[in-house]
Length: 155
Image 1 (cartoon, rainbow, N blue to C red):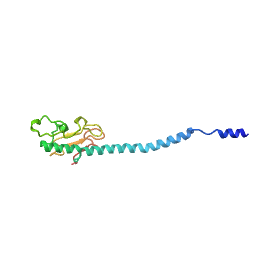
Image 2 (cartoon, helix red, strand yellow; image 1 turned 120 degrees about the vertical axis):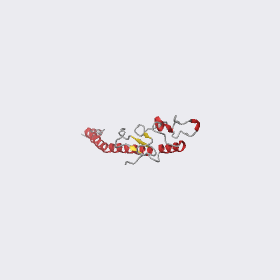
Image 3 (tube, rainbow, N blue to C red; image 1 turned 135 degrees about the horizontal axis):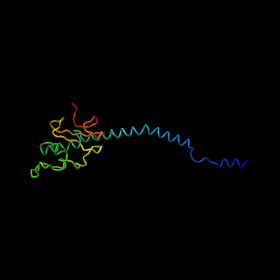
Image 4 (cartoon, rainbow, N blue to C red; image 1 turned 180 degrees about the vertical axis):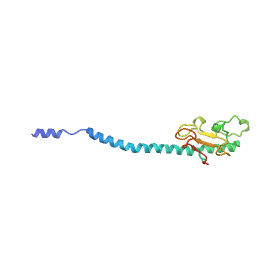
């Protein structure tokens, strides 16, 4: 009898039962269902913030365009695009020495928004007729939709 009691004491429970594991996995899945969408939306919000700051009137692209206009006398036209901030346009004679670029360190092929899409540049702009329109296609990567991010105020 004493031997049986001692052997039962030696049988120490090791590990978790299947029920305990299922409960823990269920709780983790429930937490993930609430946390993951929150993290995804904050990621999109951060990308939107980056795009807004990049193309805004005080952003790096706007600053480069202002310096270009100060030196050259006008913003690059639509055909020259943002590439004119990195490489001297063919319309400018190098001997005139008015182009003092590059105005941006980033090469034009790397000048993309937070979703990996090229910025849309137009000068003279349709909305900013005296300067330029600059926009990002936004999270859906389609131009002309509600989620576009731009440097003009809607009329």
